[in-house]
Length: 406
Image (cartoon, rainbow, N blue to C red):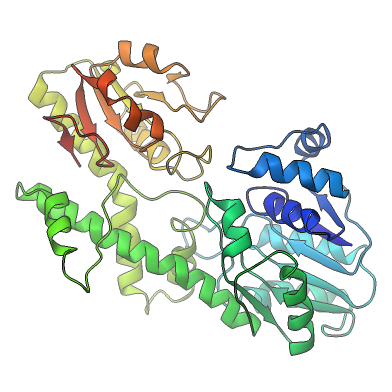
């Protein structure tokens, strides 16, 4: 039996996928409300294909509890935030999970850490805790790092088809865990050492962050000199060896906006490009806020309550708002004082910010300037409703004439 620890955006789909492919699974989370919701037959977030996967897993016998189980294999999928001052990974949730596992696990159990961590985290924070308990690593407890590689909005497909990396202290344990993931994973599974596995996951997200920063910096340059960044990128991408991304209002989610900081925190003198790239991405919400103020002045809008932000999530067509650029922009606006801007997102059902709307038409009726922060399908399919509004499109999804761009 596999005990999956942490039933959030990564742990829950992983547990469901394994259970639906014949693996005996018990999911554990300290959040009793979350566990109760799952036991009542409901999923805890929206994701394409997740409800269907949930039904299959329940039929296969998956269980949900707040209790850690006595078993031979544990998968830890808990959050790994970073310290906003030192930029180093905060491994407290991983360490807490490992400590709880050690209270119940039998001799020879394997702990698989799926949570994204910086290279060396398991050596610095996990191994000492295990040794302090008197356990011998490799005999009493085996350690593995199997970083997730999925994205909200396409989780189920990517769980099935993406390649995976398994980092282990020994080939024997690595192959054992590889076989476990091969129960559902159709991609290639590479077995390596733990530190290499830690590094590859962080580097993958850092590569993406640096490329996004390049596009965002281009947007700032073009805005400064009155050029169309989208037309320039379109022309440049006609070159067979150039593939520039589109700029945006910032970077959110719990991967690209967080993981690269782990490297900056651990290697501050060696991460000049990475560090500056992260600063560029982090500066974009304030850049958008400045664009809003400039457009208000140009159009004679004096009442900031007539400005609305479309989109609260960090990407299109999901309900995940972790680290979203919209939240970052609102936080930035609060530092400059003033009433928070109006906000609407079709995927966010609960109230998470002030002045949040839950009806698109009511939202539009109460604003003159709409700022498209997220390119949900809803806004792409209803641009006719925006006719007569002043539009700042930070995602380049609106094809109406006279639209302001980032």
